[in-house]
Length: 267
Image 1 (cartoon, one colour):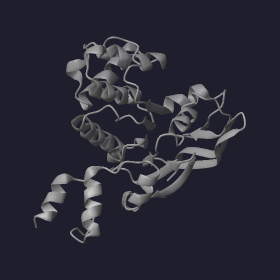
Image 2: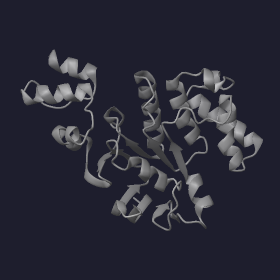
Image 3: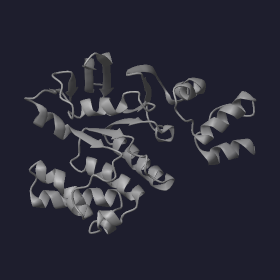
Image 4: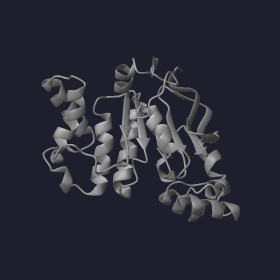
C-alpha cells in the first residue's frame, strides 16, 4: 500500500536546541495510527510542522505533494486538523462555521449546502446547525472541531488531543464514526496522551523526547505499562485492572471493555 504521509529526515532546532533529529515517519493510505505522547514530548511541535503552521522545505509529503512554499495551497486541502481548542471558532452559528473552510476552498453555495447536509446527517448534528456555538457545552464543541476538520473530505485526518474535552459518551460516538470513515478509506493520525482513544488503531507509536521510542500493536504497547507510566502516560482504568488481574492469573488477556471484563470474571 502506498504511503500517504511521509516525513523524511526531519531536523528541527531553535537557536542551539535540537527538537527533532533525523526524524522519519510513514503513514500508509487507509492506516489508523495513534501516536501516544506525554506532555513535553514534541507532539504539538510535530503537528505544527505537519500542518505547515511552522514552515519547512520538502520534508513532508502528503498524497505525493511535497510541502514547500510553492506547493502549500495544494498540500493543505488534503489535510484535516482537529485540535483541542474549543474556543477558536470564528462564527456564531454551527452551519456558518462548517461553511467557512468550504468557502475558502472555492466550493459553490449549492455544493456547500450538500456537504453540510451530508456530514451533519452522518454525525447527527442537524438539530444544532442554527445553534449559537457559545451555547454548546465543551464536549459538543470538541465534537464540532472534528466535524469541521472533516467537512472538506480530506485524505488525512490529524487529531491533536481532540478528545480531551469530550465526555465519555460523545467520545465513544465519535470514535465509532471515525472508525467507520477509516473503513471507507480515510487515513487517521491520532496524536494524543489519552490512551482510551487508541483502541481502533492498527498501529501504535510512542513519541517521547522528540523521537519515536516504540512502535507496535495495541497489546504490545499496552503490556509495557511500566514504561508508559515512567514517561508520564496514564493507563485507563479497565486496562490497569486487567493487567493486575492477569498478573495474578485471574485473567488470561487484557480487556478494553468493562462489560467483557465483567463477563470473563463471572464465567
